[in-house]
Amino acid sequence: MGNQIAEAEKPAHLQHHFVDSDQQFESSKFGMWIFLVTEVLMFGGLFVAYIIYRSWHPDLFYLAAKELDTALGATNTVVLIASSLTIALAIRAVQLDKIKAAINYMAATVALAGTFMVIKYFEYTDKFAKGIFPGAGYTYDGIAHDMAANFFSIYYMMTGLHGIHVVVGMGLITWMIIKAKKGSVHSGYYTPVENTGLFWHLVDIIWIFLFPLLYLID
Amino acid sequence: MSSHHISSNFTLFGVAGALLVLTFLTVAVTWINIPEPFNIIVAIAIAVVKAALVAMFFMNLYWDTKFNTVVFLLSILFLIIFVSITLLDTMFRDAGLPVY
Image (spheres, chains in turn brown, purple):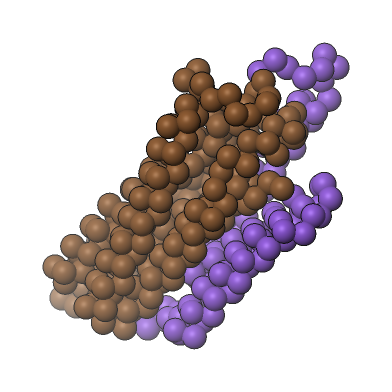
């Protein structure tokens, strides 16, 4: 057992089945990346649906995308990039043991995520008011195309699943704020904050693709 | 845990700045009319660069063990297989466009 840390000097966060903190950190992070792979493939199914429908009905996507507000979509892109920056700054602050700053950065991230959801709420309600619902509920007649409802079914599924991820991310980051306030994350152990950050950045990456694919069809 | 990479503020703000510039660029290219299919290619290319910046510098893949990068890229590879094999069916149907 030459490379095992003696019981007495073992840090509190270190689980008994890991050799040291670094191995525990790397294993946990690797597990998070495996999870992110499953996330990519889950959204992947929706991207495949998008690609097939767009290849079948390119004219529909051109017409229907005009119903989406580019300014709101661009604003939300900027909001999510800012939130990715603040969570990255929060992780840097935890690494430097600046817990107070980390809590502030994480609170800013939750606030930005909330802003994203509020903008999304206004976009959705604006469409509902016109009768643009997913699937059979679609009653809008402003788009001269038989398949118009399909574009919006894809739109609602993609942005809806993404929105659920934003809400989950807000919950996770709030949990990390509570952990930081309790003092259970610090420069020696910040694995949960790191993994939450990875999740949050993936949510940002997915929106980076959704924005041009849905809003910027010219 | 001193071996972990700690990004400088300069890097983090620099990457965020680059992402904002690319966001503006992806909107700006729609103001000039690039013909099909190059407008889609340009939009996807900008999105790929943005995603790569986030993955490398915000998600720390650039400084991490390369195995995490391999795992992430494998998900992209399988997504490409998923898309291509499905399109090999849907793009080449003789019966014309489906009714849905």
